[in-house]
Amino acid sequence: MAGSTWITQSFERVGKDAVTIRFIPDAPFDHLPGQFINIRMQIDGATLIRSYSLSSTSELGEMPEIMIKRIPDGVFSNYVVDNIESIIEWEVDGPSGNFCVSREVGNKAPIVLVAAGSGITPILSMLKYLLHYSDKEVILFYGTRSADEILYYDKIELLRQEFGSRFSVFYFLSQEKDKHIKDHFIQGRISKLAFKKLLKENLADGITNAHYYVCGPEGMIEMIQNTLEGLAVSTELIHREFFYKSPEQKNIVLPDKMLEVLLYHNDQANLLEVLPGETILDSALRDRIPVRYSCKGGTCGVCIAKRIDGKLVMRSNYALTEEQIDGGYVLLCQSHPTDNTVTIESFS
Image (cartoon, rainbow, N blue to C red; front, side, top):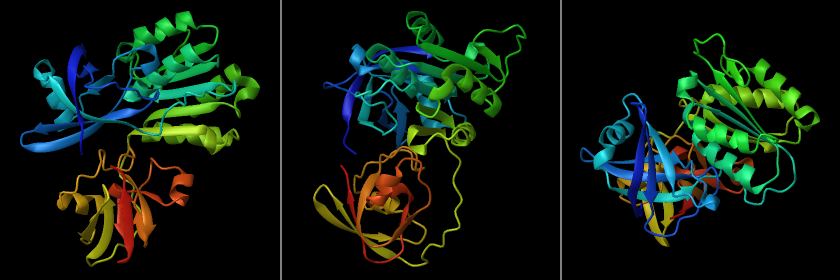
């Protein structure tokens, strides 16, 4: 996977378990609000690739910025948080991702942003863009454990003060011990009841016209989607990005023999021998074909490719739209051939 070399411009520790990093790219860099980059790094002899959403907003002249939060047993995140002072160069690929706000913001339909934990990172990029470059009403629901753990709190509050006439924010604090919190702070997780109540109070008749952008863990996203569908919101207006997704278990019977796949990459034809239970991505990487990938969990969409012929199955998909699937697009990290006629075109 080819990448650009970026330099650390500055970093700031966020408590003991996270760090915000601002970069100097090696070439002009522009991204849509909500997109992410992939970072490739050698750690203890292994090549690791991870995706991180950008909290920066290109239109405001901000340098690319991400937050890396320590994950228990996470080799990459723990290494970066522990060694950030000595990391100068980064191999970066991107931007990528379909979870983003178009620069053509269109009509005046309101925007509802929902985040939990570090899912606020791409949401912040969207929030800044929408407030500075549109006249839309924006509502933010943000869930975290306590007031002290609200990420980007100062930036969000500055935006609330500047754009208060059309920007509302509600912080949900699941483990807050202060019984006297009030105003836009709410004790407890983002619940179906509270979410629905606040939507009706703040959007009234605009609920079915608004666009919804939801980022965070699986349970929260599914609860929000179910609530919105119960309010007759079209699924086309609900945009999701999973930050944490448990492996999906499907009753898929995979072939018990090796199958061949013809993979076109960078205008070169490659004949893969996909072993039983192996994904097309794993087979390509085993043959050292430098296809793009990151999460290997069906969420980031970096390994998108197009099926030209043959039959295959995808175990999971949290990145492609129904239109993309109907158009033949697949995720290599989730795709298993089911016959010997599969032909795939990857995107470099």
